[in-house]
Image 1 (tube, rainbow, N blue to C red):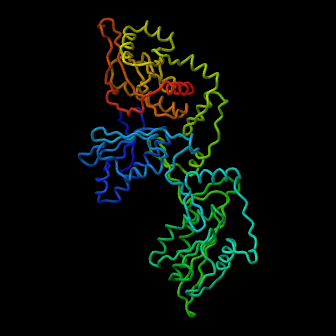
Image 2 (image 1 turned 180 degrees about the vertical axis):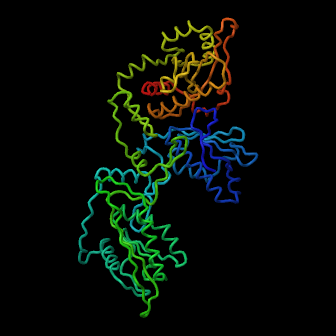
Image 3 (image 1 turned 90 degrees about the vertical axis):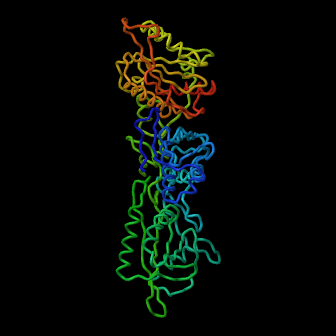
Length: 541
């Protein structure tokens, strides 16, 4: 099933629906369709990475197997292993919860504080040569490689010196491989004078699957040699001797054409101005057995590349235009190596810089800003309603509002209720004339709660509250750079202001979606330090 965004959710979150999933170690081991199990695993990883890169959210899966119990069955070792291979700390970013027939994974926004990586990637698809191995670059190697390329804006090729007399080193292997590449004829089972190295790779694919195997492996070797120091790929050599493969003349032309197509479609990224293409040479060396042509060796010489060559697009996703989308190569690199945002400009300029990227920024708060924070968003031992002048005005204008607030705040511990005539307007959303006011609760032991008070009784207005809560949460992460687990629970009230129908209790909570929303306990604000940090972020946002 394709991942889709759940548009009917009551959560003020990005909720990605991955469809039906079998959960639990025993149940997943019993799955007969291995491809389905792999696809379920891939969908969950893709959704997780998309949310990590997009400010966080919730993965929703319908539980396939009956009588499933999360505390008893777990999620399955293959899922645990795949998730653990990506995240440095699963508990820091994920929370798991079963709600009836659905399984929810709460995903916190990615933080670059520890790793230095601004986005999460499943596979970079950047390869390098490590002596005789072709390895995909991990996150650390990728960041270092891209930073070096960005700094040098492309590189100059190394100067190849002739091998030294009586000294054996890797350059000798490369020189012997170059001599071999320049030959036109080879002998069947001829012994080789060189072996595999950083610059040499040998393959002996079977004739029947030759084209398929070349298509599968060529992108990795071209990427690796291009990103290292260039090198040679010989197809038809087995260990230390020439074997070759059987092919007719027309087949060689087809093989040459397929190799060209495969190399030309490899994604590249340039830091330099020249923007050269991948430079390679391909030739077929004839193999003779007792004077008779018996096969060929395919020899490729790949030159060092000025910048970056991928085997295929990096596997990293984000949510954009209500769809889960894979980053393009250019988008991925620009998010891996961003320009530092300019915090000296106007608030509008900063907002535009932040909002253009799916990746959260963060910045330090000056002493002056801290003074302003304490003035605007105090967190005393008791309850405070701010701004005080607006509270007094609202309470005097709207009968019953003060009583409702006092009733709602009764069980709430120390914290602050921040009033606004329209949080939506502050967040850049469309104002709704039916809104009396909004109030954001920041209190210890509770998640953030956004109260909205309406003049009319209309269930459709809950969409306004959901959108405001959703936008506020993402502004805290994207603009403010808040790195903790955070959610905003919307709660709506109708305040009856018609004098002819006033009763002792002239307020009511209609279509209270907050009663249907459950978050893990880790999303509650636990300490005054956490609340203070959130206040700082709220001020920045």
